[in-house]
Length: 173
Image (cartoon, rainbow, N blue to C red; front, side):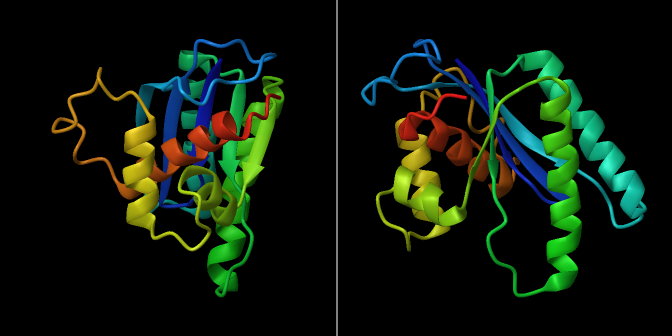
């Protein structure tokens, strides 16, 4: 089973691709470490118009789908925003991400940050760093030179945690 995890945003969209050896119709083994296939960020700039940002994100997600052929897409869900100006653009970005999945008939799962923290760390008020450390511990990162990937932003680590949440929750499309 191949899972594409997405941490949506407008300036930065984190992505992480993980795989498990167990077919998606069977329960996942919590003792098996899913393997990281790819991770990184899709970036746009403040100079891009809102429409251009959405186009960049949509095209990049389509390329990731074509490259990795995920069985499931796991996306962080927007649950609460203090700033309406932030909520609307992020919602629009999430919309083009979900559209890309729907056009390829990829089942999509959504998890709130609280659900990710509870599932990955076991504590809903865990700090971002705790989630990232536990994600690193639970995933097989042996095929990656982490120094080489050290420039990757927190958003990519968050996306790996979101993908991992789909495996640990045992939810399969």
